[in-house]
Image 1 (cartoon, one colour):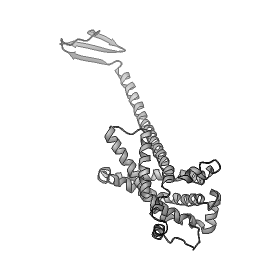
Image 2: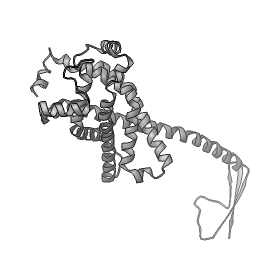
Image 3: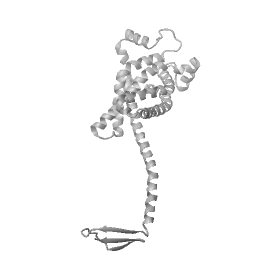
Image 4: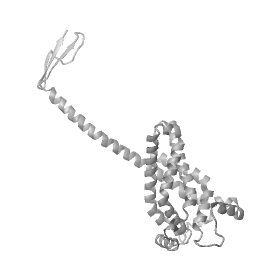
Length: 298
């Protein structure tokens, strides 16, 4: 905690923004691919299994997110390698990190942390998305309405906070693996299992949760904003699609209505009513535009 507050000092505040540029540049394609694949997979599964939402329930959300995360790893793994190495102080900025990783290991250098990164992201992203969808369903059943934008953001924060607390040990292992100096054989971790055992044996169990506070501070508001904006934009696009579908129908109905009015002119309508029925301001014979209305009273 003292380390976090010390970073708020003006001279050290810049340390909080290290890696922000790389994350910003690479998060745009990652987020776009993630949600596009997520919706596409859900749609296809629903088409293949009409009752998928009822039969699979949360499993559908979990599977969709897993597939989406695997597809997004093409973008997210280089992002993770670059940003983690910048934050660890191995490189000063995005350009230097990109050149350094490519010079040392080639294209494979951007994917050297692919498996540990994916092993951490699949359960983390899938669990966050599944919890968010279940919170939305609970909200809908409780309040009998869809959630507002701010409520979606709050539920996104709740889902991400729960996931971070569960997944922080694996995230610690992933960070240790991707930030160790490439090519170094001194005390290098041999893999996920070796890293986990060594951290536990050499540093203790609490080491896995050492980064919990900064992780919550960074991830919770980010996911809350992300899910809130996502639901808002989805609502906007649905309303746009509905308006596009309705407009041609309205025009067609208007044309049909105009045609009906034109055909009404010159027509003769005969209405048969009983004596007991009264029609205010209505005469036996009444002219309406060019047509003639004839009232026949029984």
